[in-house]
Length: 339
Image (cartoon, rainbow, N blue to C red; front, top):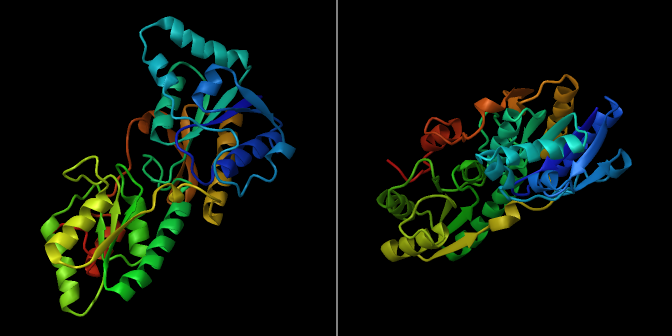
């Protein structure tokens, strides 16, 4: 068999470990021929590929980013939903001209939706979930999340000493457009006093009351962790700036903001993400060998398995009020900005 591998969407730690997991398993265990498709789905459309061999896949386990490159270009989505049958046939033509028996698509929600669309065209595809946001539906965890949480937690740890020394409120903004998983996990692990998530919303009075109460009982500083996707009055303003300004204005306490940004997405993957990517990649190769297409690899209750792409496409995995860390945090007196 001959298979292709591509990565699409934003970069994140662990993609190369996953490419390695797919490729080395396919080559060494199943005797497959493997090619890498460059720059996401556009590379498939333009047949921009490289050969992947066992030697070429060595030394990439600990590398951040992706050796195949990636793009957020929606060229395939536009073509698949086009009423022009010629566009659909062009996609099939490119796939078959590469003589592929299967295609592994590594990416987040948008990628899994596109992968499902390709399966609807009759192409043999397998998806692997990738995102630091941990919001891909159908799996309990995605690789990249653990690495991002580690970085975010260390940043919060470092803010404690500055906040304590200057008796300040420190607001740190973490990644997560729709899902607050990074902010929740890093906020809890880093000992944040207030954790604000897009899914739960907030009441500014609750936030202010929490900070004032801490000061009244002798706790001279507070750490506020906020997800970038939380809704604020001025959409173009960064949430960290908004909350820092409002807290200082309404409490009189000196407040500073920090936006961690893309640091959370870069660098070497954590050991957990390297191993998770390796397991995901190996299972994807197995699915192709067994000709079980139209599925996405998943980690469910710590078991590597797979789910139908049709059950995943277009859905998000979000934090809910009954998420165990939220429930436990509230029991400990941590504020989530709501009553």
